[in-house]
Length: 543
View 1 (cartoon, rainbow, N blue to C red):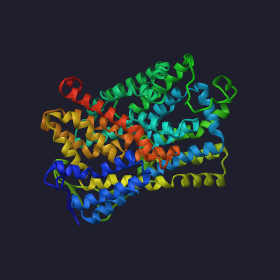
View 2 (cartoon, helix red, strand yellow):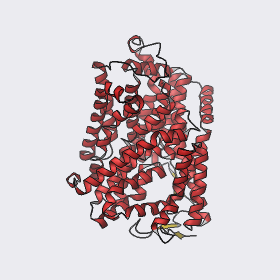
View 3 (cartoon, rainbow, N blue to C red):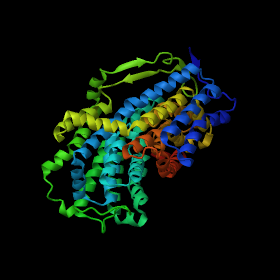
View 4 (tube, rainbow, N blue to C red):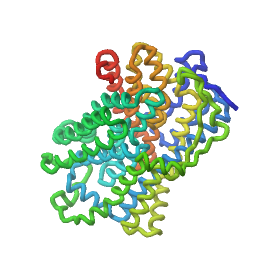
């Protein structure tokens, strides 16, 4: 059975786009207004998407069900595999008592919650995004903040918002590389253009985070730290993306922010220590923690050091190439090459591949799992306790195990049915104002798929074709797809599911969605206005 996508089944692209938007409207309503648990909202939205695909877009029932199943499988592996291994490592350090040492050692740098957020959510989270991506940064950094004593909602929300700065260059630059390849553009030009947009957000995100958690007046008390983190990150992000390439901006920028903050905090302290209003002051303070032995600190931190080393190692191209030789590629029966994409989404009719990759060895979750085994040996966790903690972690994540496959199934059915393309084509029909709406395509793509890489694969050819039609440099709009996409990451149902799983907020996905949605919209509008200005008034910024 073969089927060709129809992006305008209603005979009016505006009406077709409205029909295609129904699953998005449903999940927005359920999460933001009704505050329905994520697994329920995801299941209902998925059911609506399948019905719209079959009834509205005339997708054959068999193809719709196979597509949904493939998306659900992807939600289990590799996405859920990353989440459970990341949280398992964190749980192991808690069970052994070593996380208390980690908390104390961080307090020797600072026990101020504002500065801990900058170090963990912004800088360390960006490092993990650059090395791994795909959910690992939020899962690990949000879990760490909860362990440090952060309010779980703030821990999850701050990590999602902080993740805005590094997403476009995440996973060793894969989103930018993918976008350039799909649009047939020079990858260095696209990298440079993204590096002339995102640093404007990166420099303000640290201040944004602290204002959100502590208010403007309190943020001004730590303004030097915010500026050091933001400027160090943004500066290296601009330089490396323009002169080195898309692979290293996150790694170099996050290291610059970590080193800059650490040096600053050796010579400068805020006038007061800030904690959450309902939080008790710890019995120990930074000044009384100097008796922690270096060996004890290294032992406690070893799981996260190992985690970082393994993630970076797995991200190296030569290593990844070797590990990928063990990948099993399953051409999904009845779906692979059975659906054809057409213009304007692609230049010529193109059958869609449906290959489920079981990259059991090269997956980031496997790197974390190996790190967990080595960590268990270092922490003195025997086999019995190891599997006991693993079992508890799995029990902790039973609801996300339902939610994540649902939202990935939603992403796949909207992509393979042509519903996402219908929304994109509608936005692309804005003519002179297309540069204004170009980042909104990326925002929409990341909201639907949870991935800047997937959003670029979905829309970057459309971005390039439309830009040429309206007389705009396609490098700008392809870059804007990635830059706009990063602002949608914080409200993607997939990201919300990961964050709630990591912080014990399962069932409160609506609260977290409401926490982040206004920030997502404001930042998206900022990228939209920036792109419009660069298209017509600041075109000298386009490489």
